[in-house]
Length: 176
Length: 117
Image (cartoon, rainbow over all chains, first blue to last red):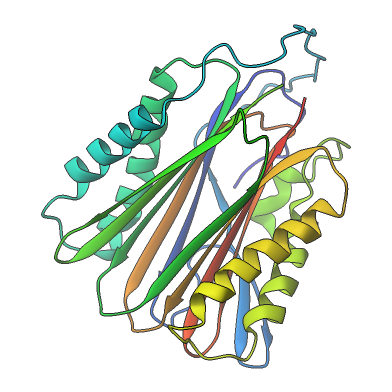
């Protein structure tokens, strides 16, 4: 369970949201469901990586008068990271429920750590990872963003083997 | 929704995930509510869902950049796991993920809101 958060000064890398969708079963973990005819809507819960027990007071950050980013993300470098991580973790693996749960979280963390290692300042990072079983089903993923197209970017990479598929996406948002 | 409590910290600047949640559910219902999975239409559906969600979110005129993702999957008993990890300012930014299903398909929509300045 997470505590109520106070305002924070520094950026923290702590959120991981995990969902499991297995066949026609209901949601795992805590969530709220209500039925509308034959459809169900659920909202997932959030797992916290770290707990911050000290209350932090929000402080206004001083204006840097910077008009744009000094360094931007290279799409090629991000694609390399995603390709590297997905292939190394998923090559020749079979889809298993418990293993996939852990693996999505692990891959998320690994990708985030490697993107942060690029040391590009003033960027917020969002990583999305999907791992699914290949069962002859059809699937469509779509994404739309309202952002500053000159500074913000996103990169996606998908991996497939005989038993499963993995899709990883990175969104990098510039902080003005 | 106890898991979402941390976003309701009372601060004006924080992202209201409950509001986003309702917006998203409404958009999904209006686009695919009552339909069965169709390979020819799914492309149109995902595009409609993300577009509608985005336009509705923008109507609140809050100083946020939004990222909306939608995944629609046919129900065949296959498993799917999704995770996300974010490096941002936890006081101001937030996310909301909604999972919706009917008899023939599953739909997962995630909204990420990143504060400007």
